[in-house]
Length: 332
Image 1: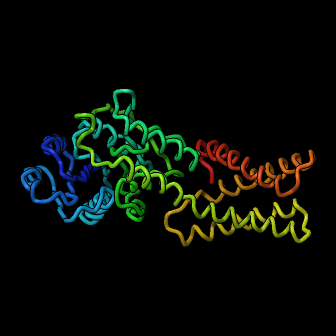
Image 2 (image 1 turned 90 degrees about the vertical axis):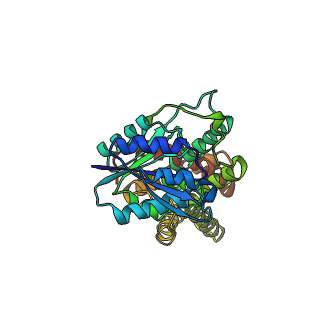
């Protein structure tokens, strides 16, 4: 199966040329995307043309746009089947590790492969903090554990490429969108060596702006579910307020939430889309737990609205737990 290395590059150093030379020697087709680096970097990209296809544009659009630009080129110019490996232009991904993740993708063409570095005290603090925050948010959002959410070393087959082309995101947040979109597929992490040059000084990641941008993606991904949940809660309050039985209100509001969520997911391109069977079973478990907890709280004197609020918060934890269990099961 053909291996294609996709390298998004913005103001790269000479290390990039040596990396793509080695990849070319190993039989990789290399595609380099100049993300608006400017004429000051003409010599580097001219040297790169000896070993790679170089596509350039201006002005700078962001890493996510560079990756999608490269994917569109690959989809148009290469015949399937093939493996695409994305690697950073700063030389911090070793050629041996690029080969390692590409080989893993060849063995698992339905999976997204992530290169996983050990982020210890020797790693730049902005990398450790940024990954720590997104790791927790990803776990809360999807129920899946990923150690390094921001790795730029990724591999996937031509079967996954079309879905990644439809994702939003222009800068570094695009890489978060990729792992969110693949949350219900197989994601495999492969250990790679941690390499940093000059404390990662060559990185164009903006700690404050880009961290905020990354974390906004989790909210956007869950927004249809949040809206459906709030609408279901409102329906519960209305039914009870007009004299309906609280248990019937639980059942009807849950059914309404399910239908609304699936409806929203059809019109919102980037949203949580769990398999139907898994989602229905999860919803059934949550409904039973919700009714049981509310009954217990009301039995000790709590009013129905307060009981619903407390139970609703508790059901978030129940949902996370159930999703985590189902991530390990081929379900739905």
